[in-house]
Image (cartoon, rainbow, N blue to C red; front, side, top):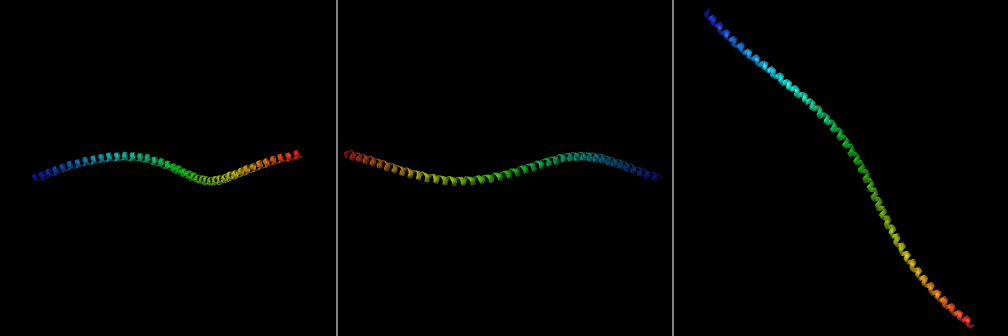
Length: 152
């Protein structure tokens, strides 16, 4: 009986030790559960914050995308305006070239007219001189005739 009691006592001690280990293990499991719940709450909070930040980033991206589209339109309009201005500038350059050619032609005509006016003025001076010579001769002749008539 004593051996049975000793065996029972050893089994009882082993059972108490295993119960103590099981209690410790259960306590650790509970701590792990609490830590896991805490981590899960922390992760949930982080996910919520990330979702908020993601929403803000998506709003910012949307806003920047619309700004980019507006800028693209402005650049396109400016490019079109620049092309139109360039065409107008080319037209004005052609007009300027044409006007320069016309000016040169008019200048040449003016020189010719000035030369013709000079020639006409020289002819006029010659004719005037001839007229004066003729008048002088006529007066001289008239004086001679008057003398001859008076002598008759």
